[in-house]
Length: 276
Image (cartoon, rainbow, N blue to C red; front, side, top):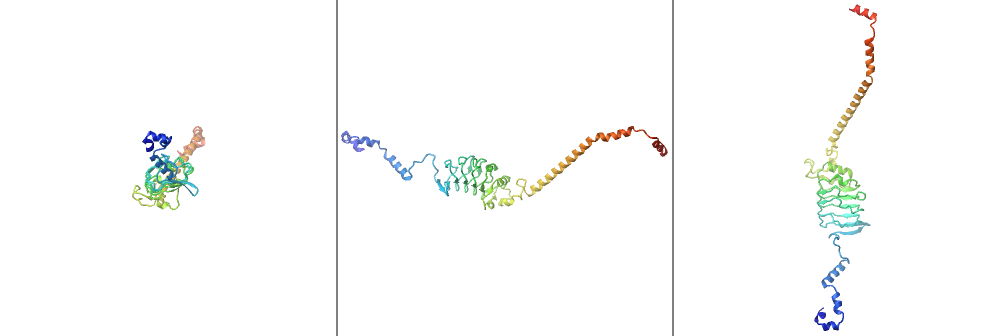
């Protein structure tokens, strides 16, 4: 460049050299290009994979790992062909509606060891036909909406959460299968009834009146059912009697009318006179 800029004579002595040099990009651009080629050969896209995440083939399954990546929200750049997704050990606070609906073949989802305190009722929308394993352990969940699990046939880990131990949790357990060995980790947290705090939830099911189906609730339901049955039978008996009386009222009145118009026989009259 200095040679081209020194004088017009130099430019005449080396024809075309200055023009060729001028076509090269700046040195800083060349350095950036060399760094990119050394790093992997492709220029990262603006919506690339979050730092700390990577895609891989594990046991023949397309896997996307974002473990311990410092995420505070669910990433949107997860490949569509992902079958196993690991978002564990991050700082996720919630799972919004439809967060995974762009993953049509997702089978396994790990959300453990976050700080999840809220799940949308549509958090797993679009996964009804594929999702089989869900890990929600070691979060801050006190309750989850039953709607979030409707239509799902999954095996779920709910251990190590501060559960409220209410009817909603009981309904959730009716819709899902617990991962083997995780049931004992479902413990009532500080938002539960004071007498339930610290207790394991599964032994309480059937013992407490969480949804009116516990031991006392079952007895009460049985009593109510018995009263309803007896009341039904009583109504049927009364209805039958009323129908019987209504159908036979004419036959009941006819003998009375005949008795009123019958003549008094002489024998009866004489007998009556004798008695008087």
